[in-house]
Image 1 (spheres, rainbow, N blue to C red):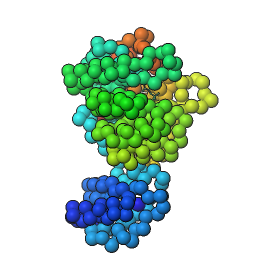
Image 2: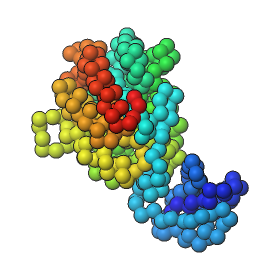
Image 3: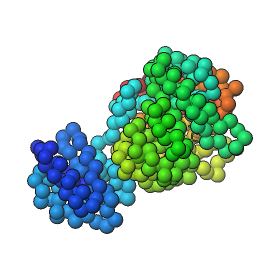
Image 4: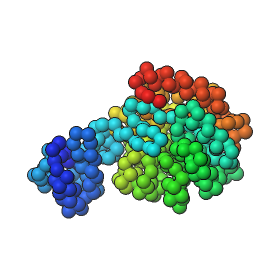
Amino acid sequence: MLVVMQSDATPEQVARVIDSIRQIDLTPHSLPGPTRTAIAITGNTGAVDARVLEVLPGVKECIRVTKPYKLASREMHRDDTVVKLPQAEVGPKTFTVIAGPCSVENEAMVFRSAEFLLSRGVKLMRAGAFKPRTSPYAFQGMGVEGLAILKRVREKTGIGIVTELMDTEYAAAVEEAADVIQIGTRNMQNFSLLKRVGRCRRPVLLKRGMSATLEEWLMAAEYVMAGGNYQVMLCERGVRTFADHSRNTLDLSVIPPAKALSHLPVFVDPSHGTGKRAYVPAMALAGLAAGADGLLIETHPDPERALSDGAQSLDFPGTEKLLDQLRKLAAVLGRTM
Ligand code: PEP
Ligand code: MN
């Protein structure tokens, strides 16, 4: 249920509605908007009796939300969510690029990557300290040492850090090092991890599970939001199909329905989506054209020697060329980059 307040409702009237929702043992989520405040209600297993709320002063109407994902749904929140980071604003008017190496490999390469990206106008860098690898014998990431490198590089350069959290145990440590906490495809339905990041104060980049439906993906976002963290960004990174010409099948067709059903920003990751460097630029541009609000891309100073995902990483000249093309297309589509 969504309680919509009148545009001239006073803060006291809003507080009284919030209080009344708590009194019937449900959870209120205040959603202030440009023209009015709305209060979302979660925690109910059946329908909420609107009559007790409709009669309160300042209430305009109560709207039933039909989707199982409530806070993530556009029924609950008509306007696109804008996620405000210290370095960038993610939303419908911008196209936000997050680039960088798959893994933190050492301080020099992370620093070099940050300097390169900043010099080309990219203000957010991705790099994993904890790596979910298919083989236990493959490089597992530098862990807490990698987080320390990310913190130092952020301090020195000012670049924003996007890094993955795999385990609730390291939530506080990752939150401290990251401007955005990434949840990987393999953990999209790790519900204890989702609940934990629901209590974090950093925005979350939630990758789509490699075999998740759109509804399952939005329900995963709902877990984070139900915990009180409303700053969720979705990221399409390819799904499993019968196709073997690429590592995954980048499902660009999910972007328009994701944006229709949800108000959350949507990113596209053509690096994991294709697995092959040669196909990345075309799919990045296609993602922007399909309506994505941002791009997550792997860029490495020396892809041939990368410790993970080198085959899908662009080198610096390749990244630069793609950024130029994206800027031109973004301008045509009325987005700034
Ligand atoms: C990554 O971004 O490096 C990564 C491991 O992504 P995914 O979870 O999409 O495989
Ligand atoms: Mn990777």
